[in-house]
Each structure stands twice: as C-alpha cells, then as structure tokens.
Image (tube, rainbow, N blue to C red; front, side, top):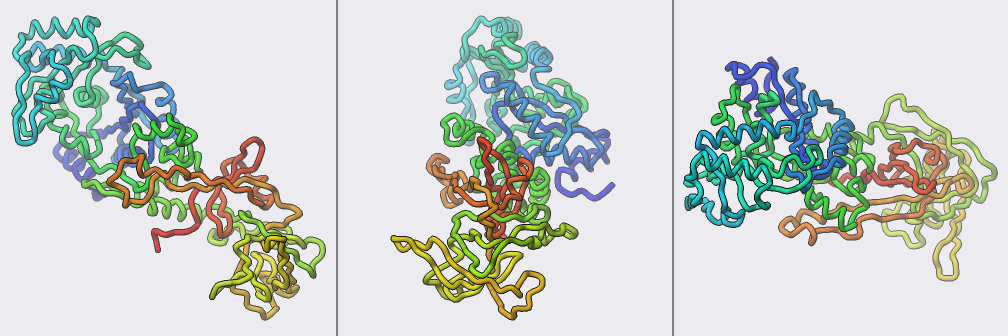
Length: 541
C-alpha cells in the first residue's frame, strides 16, 4: 500500500491493518438549506478523494432533518455543483430515507431506560446544562418510567403537542466534562412540511442522533467531518455503542476551509440574497460554487487549490490571494489572449493607409498554441492611461516625442495631442515606423512600452464588469460581516473590444492583455466581459 498522504489516510491504514474495515465507504453530507460554497469543495475533495484513494465508494448524503429550512431547489443545486466539480457519487441517500428506522431506534433507547421525554422548554434545558466548570442539573422528568416515556413519545409523534412543548433526550450524564453528553436532545417537535415526506412526521431527529445511525445504515466505514464535530464524537460513539452497531463507523475530523474576504456561512449568504445585496446565489461575487462557476472559475482550478492546501487537523485561515493565484496559474496556461480597451483614447496613425493582418500570439506560454491574425489600421483605440502630457519619471508609454510598440504590430512615435475645450486629450496623432513590424523589426528603435489596442473601424462595443471582494481585508476579522461588507463591489464599464471576442463561445475564458482574465457572455444581446480574476498577483509578490 502507498504511504499515507495525510492523517486521515494514516487512520484508515491502521483500521485496514487491524481488520476493522475492508471496503472503504465515505459520504459527502450537505444539508439542503442553501447553495454549496467553496468550503464544501474541500469536504468533497476529502470525502470523494479518500474513497477513490482506497478503491472505495462515496455516497451523496442529504442531511434533511430540519424541514423548516430545506428545499428541493437546494437539493438540485447541490447535485449540479458536485457534478460540475467532477465528482460522482455511488448512492444518493437522505436522512429521511431512514426516518422510520431512526424512530424505532429511539423507542429502543426508551425501552432500555436510555432516553426520556422532557417537558422543559429549550431555554430551560439550556439554563440547566451547566458550564465547562460546573455540572448540569438533571431534568425533573428524567426518571419517568420507560412505559410513560414511550406513551408520551408516541403522543409526540401523533401530533398531540405543540412545537417546543416536549422533546426526547438521551439519558447519559449531566456531570460529564463534555457538555454534549449532558442528556442531549435527540428528537424535537416541529410541525413543518418536509420536502420529501410531506406531513407524515411532526417530530424530527436531531443531527447528532441521526448522524451515526444514517452512517451505519449506509455502510459508511469512515465518517469524515469538519473540526467543529470533534466535541460531538463521544455522542456519535455513544449512539453507535448503545444501539449495538457492528462494525461501528469511525468519525475523523479535519480542518474546514476558511478564506479571507469571503462570507463562509450559508446563513449569511442567504441573507445577502434575500436582502438584494447580490443578484442571487450565483452572483459572480458569491463564494458559492454556483457563483464561482458563473464567474468563470474552472472546476479543475478549484480541485487543484484543494489539493495544494492539503488536509490538516488544526483550523487556519487561507488568504484569498492564494486561491486567486492558483486560478491565475491555471488560466495563464490555457486561456487565449485578446485585447479590449477599457478607457479608450483615439490614436490616428498619420502616415498609414488601409489595413493589414498582423500575427497575434494565441497564448505565448502554451506550447503549440500558435497565432491568429488581427487587422491593423489607421485609426485605433488605446488606453487613456497609456498617454500622458506630463509623464512621471520612468514612464515608458506614449508622450509627445516618445515611442511605444503597439502589441504585435509597429512602433509608433507620438507627434501631437488634440484637446477639447476643457483641455482633455481626445486624440493623439502618431507616425509609425514601417520597418518596426513585430517579428521583423529592423528600425533600430528600442521602445520599452508595449501597448494593447483595438482597430477603431472593426472593434465592437462591449460591457466590462469588475468585482471587489464582498468583505474588506482581514483586519476587519473581529467585526460582524455586515460591518465588513463592501457595498459597492460591482463596477461596470463601456469598452471597445476586438471582434474576435464577439465571436467567442458563451463562458469562454480569455486573458485580456494588461487587464485581467475575463469570460465572455451576453446580456440583452450585448457582449459582456466579466472578470474572473485580476492580472495582478499580489500573493506571490
């Protein structure tokens, strides 16, 4: 067997060697109460990847034990996101598939004196649970007989009581140093219509109780959870032991993915959608997988990112810049190059007439990518920032009397700037050097600046969208997310783009020269260039 790549695999190797497991089965367990975000991508990487490593299988398990927050819409979205990331599950399983068995196990615990019906309110239960240094106080209903508890529990199921009026609690130890073992609630009353079972049930199991049962009934050998479930593991084991599960699944915890500048909570993401802060769950600014897909982030880049950050035991925070650097590396290797001008300034080549084809590199970093032809002409657009009447030191772009190369074309010398009545430059007039064509330059002129451009006679009007992060930098980490929110995080520009982009496929990714990585799409029939990731790489610097 190959050497373990992380501590989870080391534990599994131990279990295999000891004969505690043979065929490995894991599960990816989202709750269908919202759209998946990038943090779930790491859980997929761990669960699906671990199963694949051992030639095992991974189930898609929907934890649908809270019908008040769950929807079929979210189930469908979760399926889409998993398939988009490139994972395939063995079985699609729901907690609701096992509701009858979970209920029967509860009656078994009651009959054995290991669970009781409690009349305390949720607030009273919380107030009697104790603290980390003080034991809890036993419920006055803890010593009801099994017969009375069974009668009351069946009345709960029959709908006799209101929400919160009663609950079922495991009878464990109110003095346990682990608060999760202080007679935890395992069933609550909830009169809500379930997205799959309708109104069949008005009582629902708590996750900590249903989790080990559902794992066992699925045949899960290793239940891989994020670190917040570490303190819940003794309860996971208690349920499995008391119900006689053999073999009992093993729970192993790993650190969840935390990224700076992103909202990493489905509850807050839902709030952003409901309050109209973003356009929807798939808004390109959202860290949801639907949002990342809509933004143009390649699924392979997300998988690569998860592989690079690895699997750890301790929580930590990853800089958003690292994620962007991984995406940028991926796109740099495969995205074709193109040109668009965000703030156009007219450039007239005074000593040139007509048009000609020049060779433009499709992707200079990709071997065999080749070139394509673009039309060079008399009237062009360049970026307004690429000309200055009063340039600062070490300015290598165009100035009066200065030289610069037009990408893949010629070196030009700026001779004149035309201004309007306010003094704003509206046109620059340049002369080109006929013997300076890119690839066959014999002019002897060394132009340090290389400018992107579009042919004014052939370019198309387009909309360019840039995005800020939803949250300000990590210095704001101690504040509520609403105080960290960047309110104006979408910026829209009218730009001039080369016609090559107008003919691109929907969603195709490009590197816009000196601008960034963008995908093409259409809104109301108009070409839109939507930012994927900036060209600037602050992380590696």
